[in-house]
Image (cartoon, rainbow, N blue to C red; front, side, top):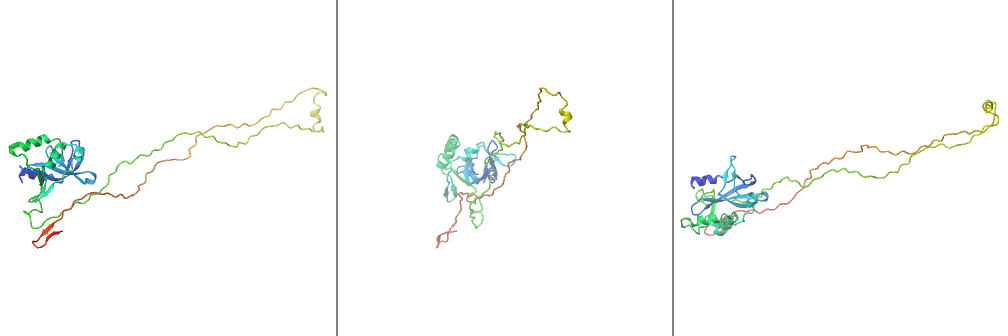
Length: 269
């Protein structure tokens, strides 16, 4: 690898952001052109729990001050990129012309791709293979006698989001209440008493024969209705944490290794 490509290889594992600052995902593999070995694509994990691997053009990717990377393409465009399947070859995985053209059309780079393909008589060269293919990773023939078998694992986490809102609302209703109220009133009762020595002086204090009237004022109670506001209770909203379990599914890839000993063929580990 040239020094420039070694610099690109250091991108693996960093986080990719779009121009608006939205996090796209973690960078995985780097894909190079078969003709000149220059990096043309990188892959990043997107989707729920990072289970989707999307291709992003290397062109327009810049390093940020914090060490991560930024692409000029928006996150939604990257998430909607075609899911191409590289073909396995004796040198590792390879991205064919058809698959690569799908990506160039998606990112509207078909014109630029055409110019590269026609330059210097290199028309028809096939896409590329990932940086870190055979001869460049820990399982290549230029390393040691062992071959590394890898597999993908689901990375499951949780995210906090708003599921709804609850509110208290106070309103006024009018009801009719019936209450029994005790009341009193005055009524007239005629009392007669005989003339005795005790009341004789009062009885003889006036004329012997006369006409006159006596008036007595009568009273009674009437119910009086009024209202007053009285606090009766306090009401508030409280939140409880409810623990639940949900089942998630995702596709993972696993590498298998076939052994060829010359006498026993096709054994798989």
